[in-house]
Image (cartoon, rainbow, N blue to C red; front, side, top):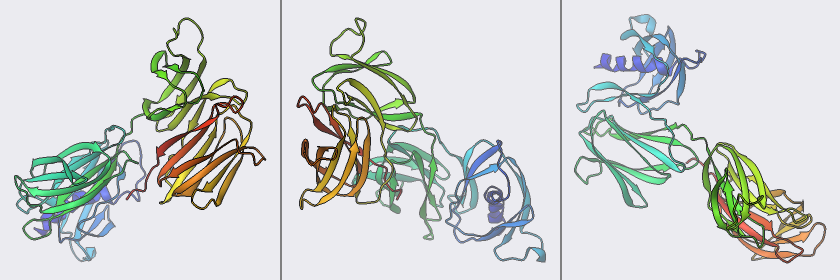
Length: 434
């Protein structure tokens, strides 16, 4: 039995332990090693050097990028003196290039130590989704795997046998996974908390390992980054007063009857250049020039807002702002103010709503610029004044800021004709990976 187990780790070790001393090249593969055999610790020698001492059960390595090649491996019981005798097993193995693989030392259904190699699906998923993969690598009969969200079962993988796998793509969020003998309601493992973070495009791989009979049955979770689609998110903001419009993008009608002071929901668009033409609603685009025209490049992964607004002098124009959706500390909100109105340079003051206490001032904000700050969750009052004065020309605007969001306040319209107002856009920020 010991030799069988050691043979498993001989194959595992070649992938795990050469990362520190082999230079990567183009002929590489990505490998993660999962130790799912309970009660066995070993020392692994690769090409004559001790590279993995005391490799313990229940361990998942970080992904390793290793060059294609052949490796000589000698395996000894943990702590054994390799000069005192021959290795328990010796051999060589060839590592091919190209695949993203997980190599799992585990027990077969009957408890025999074995080795399984799974090729990981790293293809792109829809924005906001996550991939869940379940792998049966335990000494246990066929099982079902139930996935719950907010106490409601959202999916079940049925009839999963060792060493099989199954996968589903689901919206990101907090789930719980439970394992049950096939066809029963008896939970034998879990519910395991599974946070599918919307911040990342990831595959979450759940391994059932150990033995159900001897009490070593447990779950391990591995995460793998997926390929990303070359897309970005765009919100369109209409800040030109008194003009309902049709918005054409790359020659096609994208937003008909788009009313002033409207903020669209986020749109997911491929990376690329976009030509934007805006006509009065119902106008024939072939009959004359657009009221507003411009172009914008959307990088992959960007979160942007395209704003139709007035310049300081009152001319219609387009501006593109890249939204900062980076993670902030817990309990904080991000407040962004954008000057996109026919108005001179302004100051923006912020006060606590309940106490009236002054919080801060953004000074000298001109069109089309922005300023941002991070503040604790609270209700605030915001006022706008011509720069360097105490004369409030707008406000106080009541802002309720929840943590984990960016609140973007647009000054739009014209101060001269009384159409000056503010629009508020809310964007969910990236959250900590926990």
